[in-house]
Image 1 (cartoon, rainbow, N blue to C red):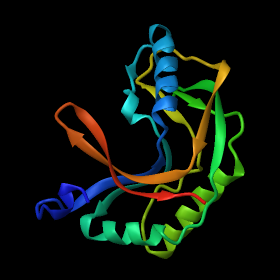
Image 2: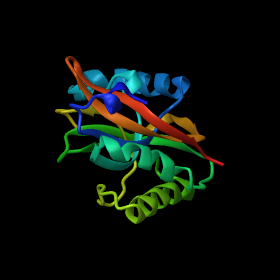
Image 3: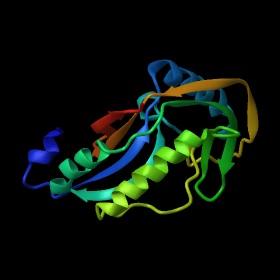
Length: 182
């Protein structure tokens, strides 16, 4: 349990559910970002921060974190894998991101199960249409839209509850819980 949970001054923490890549996949993502850096500029995401968000909750009361951990035990979702093969640009958000031409149904099943479980337990979360992606750059100034010659294979066997924790040097992602896929 993070230290913040026991600090009486901390009333809520900013959290989201995500899948995090293995070190091997992180290195491949970082390599792609390094290749793109001279082209798109912007703020490159550092290797340990790569993730694919499943559901963003935002600020959650510290007292409800244990409830979140508990209700996730009831989700029975299957392992899956996908290939990241496309680099794109969202002008509105000014991000360069990686995504798959087609994500597996198991990913969407997991997101649906999370959203349903959270709704039944009374949690509020971001309900925008789910668009899975992995951000490589923020505040990108030049668009990049291309396909990877060598797609990145990403096997997924668990999901995580992450705290988005402000630090003096930016944001850090702190695991608050994790669950295995079947």
